[in-house]
Length: 211
Length: 252
Image (cartoon, each protein chain N blue to C red):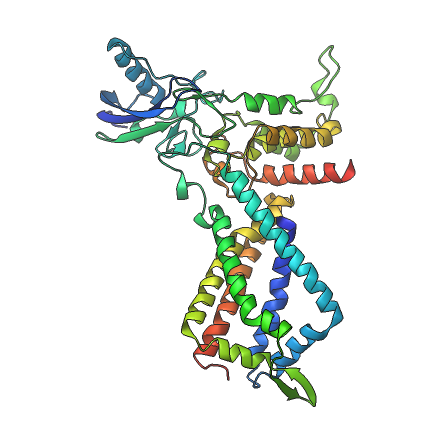
């Protein structure tokens, strides 16, 4: 769980970095070049297989763990400890992960499937023919329902990371007495900044802040 | 502190034995002194039940001074009641007001089956200790204590872990019924001392294997255990256990 989690966290860094190119305000030039690089470089294609493997492993492990852990207490409490002992999102990683899975299916069907399996309209940048993924973003995020679903997905991601980031390091046995403040601080900042950046992408397209 | 008396409503889990289904029974109890301990209040209830010809409530208790780890009640949704770093026997009735309703349940975990009423079988913890929670030494005369030097900070960390009384509140509080805080306290306590060092690898592997065998869940780091522990055992021990386990697994 922790290893695949940290691997997926590292993927988020790349993903948010490339997507942030939409704010370059250059008509999508920088973003299209970046996505062209990601789509056509052999190394990236190989890493993509690893990414999907990591993702599937994380989902399967997570679901198995959730089912196993839930089965450890057949009779529940009449009055539960609830928020008196832990944060709600720390106890809801299974639920948050499942919401993220639904989000992911929608997200892949919006962008990954069309770019991989259909011919997107192309555009020319610096004399180079590249697929116009940027136009796809502008098109998809015109629908307010999609924008709201994406923002909800990002909120789920934020809470998933708020617990998952520090939990992953604890599971790996990082001596958290010494480093726990650092890990918690970085994890908190990462969860907020990355989720906010992702959430602002559909919002800024919908509100016309990028064109 | 001002002394006062109170009338209370108690909702207590009654279960004849591990085979039968249990249920909550409601009891009214009067004139409880704010200076009584929670267990003394339970004693008063039991005397009343005996006088009325009813079966008294079975509950675990021994030292009644917060050091043996025998008492175990899930009181109003929290192991050992509302006070921080406290055992049920050290909980006093001044924590409650006249007219309060108190719900008392046994620890809930498959690995801790209910034996009767509020008593659960915690022998799973004993078997985890038997799997590695010890050091092997030759018997004979006690050696001079200062012949093995222990750095002060390590002695302090080890002692903090050794404070675990094995009550099982961590398991009761954990959403996964995980025993990681207990096991980590026992592993850290010994791994931090020179006497425990030689067996640290097999200890971590064997105790974790036994923990899984007993049917405890996995740790997902929610920190509920740490927040309810009567001896304030730190989650740092869980990270220590994880690193002990990973290093033992890699090097064996």
